[in-house]
Length: 193
Image (cartoon, rainbow, N blue to C red; front, top):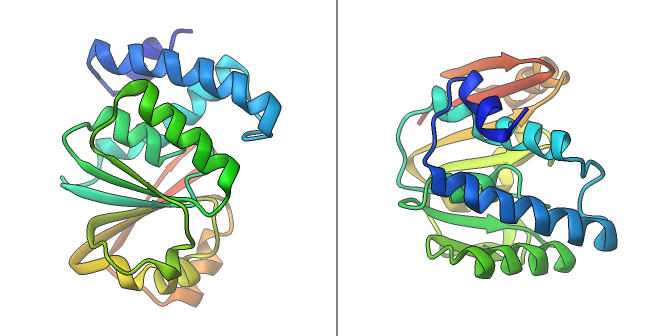
């Protein structure tokens, strides 16, 4: 199945330019991924599923004009969101130099002017404040909230891509005003401002 068919089947309609950019992203990830061990799953089907996973929350989250993605790795979800939403200011926070090099190469290859890549740990960042903080498979919810405290505004929302441990994490984090949207094995934890 094509990426476009997969996304449209899941209610996501994007411009043709998005798919052109994704084609380049997939080629670069497959090329770099083998050499630098960026992602364990490099088949077209696996990458397409990761792109869908990255974008699926656009169906239910509120509008935002800036976001920071913590621990972007090979680009999920932050790079994919930045490609899909070129009018939104995107900060990708990634401490590992090989992954930062890859993200910078994709940024240059696609001419993404909305994107800033920061090689650092989230807790060390001082000078950005965003509407939305995202993270996929980085650490537990309580710690994510703590290490991103310095990036939030009074009205910042959070979108964490979680697996099966979510229930116990929610008990520990003691948060309220959140939604959990589930798709397959993924739980999207959306904490509203």
